[in-house]
Amino acid sequence: MAKIAIDAGHGGNDPGAVYEGRQEKNDTLRLALAVGEILQDSGVDVVYTRTEDVYQTPFQKAMAANEADADFLVSIHRNSSPTPNQYTGVETLVYDKSGKKLEMAENINKQLEKAGFRNIGVKERPGLVVLRRSKMPAVLVEAGFLNSEEDNRLFDEEFDSIARGIADGILETLQGSGAGQTPGPEDTQVYYRVQTGAYRNLDNALRQRDQLESEGYPVFIIEKDGYYLIQVGAFRNLGNATRMEGILRSSGYQTYITT
Image 1: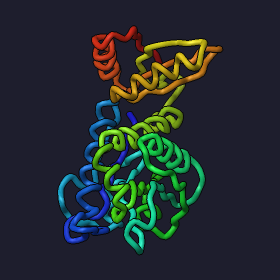
Image 2: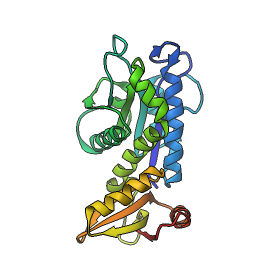
Image 3: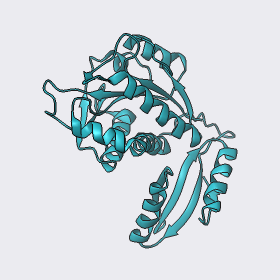
């Protein structure tokens, strides 16, 4: 099972950015817990650097992820600009633009763009301790500008879509990463997914994908042998996949479990 460390930026006597009484540490904790819950429901092992309003140094955050032996670290923040309402958008920071961390950063930004944010890209920040001292691929998500009225409106009104977007970006990366696998000739671990459709026509596949997304499911399109396959989740545990299949079937989807 893949393990993701979720870090809610700042905390305790470090509020992070502050704008008209709104504190970054509160937004990041709320969002981190929501993302973690979605990932757990999708069969991912989640650990948090904090689940309440406590202070940790960036080094302590990185060490917590290292000690948990996580496959990825996702640190959640909100941005700030020198002047209120100067900028809008989401950006994700990485130590350098290489490997799975870059892929995850791009996937998260793409999903948050769907949620309504302006995508302002992936930036290298090798000086950030939480990125530099973590042993696993790490990304730092800046979920909009705290001192932007537009981004705050989006954060509040589309909160569930934003949490789902971050989770979907993570799941999309895990799907191709093999995180958590230790395969041998007689011990190859797999992901279980729930398939709800197979279409020759891409438009038909997109319609079902959009419907599933609107209902809050972590859904992917996979192209294989001339078909567009609609699959939900990425589960290490067959029981979790079976539960998801039951939920989808009760919602009227024709389902079966695949790997």
